[in-house]
Length: 471
Ligand code: 6AU
Image (tube, rainbow, N blue to C red; front, side, top):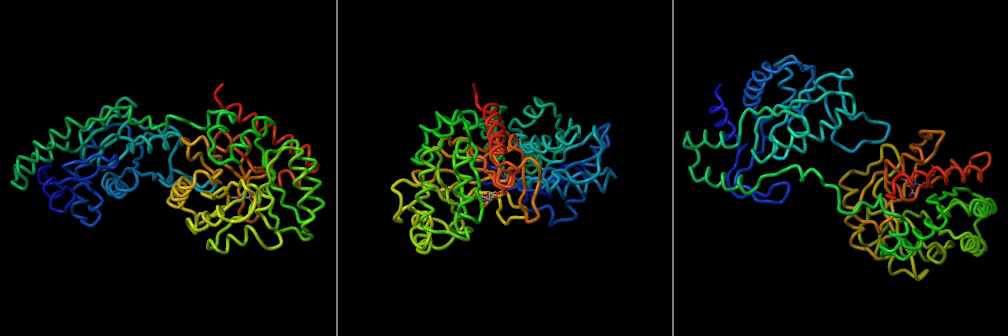
């Protein structure tokens, strides 16, 4: 089958459309290529695989194929069946720490991998896939694509050491359709004008934000925090040189007070689950506040509010715990939306308060998705004065230095517990995962000597901060 006939088939199945379409980067394009529909047309898929296989036969030294997720996955599968070349698969979703592999399939260190892609505009999707494959030891020097949109992807990939082979260029495809009288010549003119005005270069790959909170000192971030407690917490961290938050998950008030007193000098915040105390009495609060003031740390109740606003408001201010009167920080789930935040903002309690919203969790198999995480960050941005930070596991919101990333799941000796908790090392959470404040619970409270353990975690965490922050 000729490329012309194949182009006509693509047009007929609606994979190529003409009009005004918004692209991923927000600019309008007169031609839109949506090759996802191919899976509905096995005869077109077969032809595509034949055409790609014929080109691949002219390439040397290929051990495996890898399709760029998701559209090119079935294409790569069809090509694998056609050529007999084995395939590996890259997962697109964020890595679930310690449980999922990013690259599935069998391969050896140094195996040469040919990338298969449907459409290339900038080449950035290919580069993301190449990065993960290279991290696993595969060598990627070539890519084969169905359609080159001729917007600079070829050069961008070349500059990164990847040679891109394409079946069709966008202008060739359009010319075939004009020859077949399927579209008018005007479309070629529109396309030429569009291509002339919309060329991309390597600079689009440097998506690093202008500000990167990970490189800034806590002193400077203290000034940028819009929430007063976040600002205070940054200041404490800078002054005491600690970003350790103790999760004092104990069931006895005397033990809680004792740990607060002993470990107080080494922490910036003391995080409680006040409802697990078996002997809670309101008389606990005054000494706890006094210790917090004397050792200069913030009281933080990890209540994880997650009800309708009206209920949350009462849970915050009333009942036996009267959380709002002593905890200047609390956690909340974003699940219920704005109502929870409006309730926490308006409830009686301390005049200054900060909320940490949960965007990700350290628990394995949690139901939180990437979309939920993104929506949580958006919700947080709507309450800049109220939100002190985000509880998460990855370096999110790099461009918002005034927000604090709180990351639990930190322990040196173990990788997990028996109930779904997952742990990383102090260095990994600060340097790799982007934690500003790291939460350590059982790593300290169950240690033979909690004070020695607290000092050790404080030192390791602070060394990691010093590595990360620009001198
Ligand atoms: O170090 P651990 O495992 O003994 O304690 C971790 C603490 C516990 C959890 O309730 C809390 O951190 N936590 C949170 C928080 C802070 O909200 C979120 C999460 O995803 N994982 C987690 O462990 O008090």
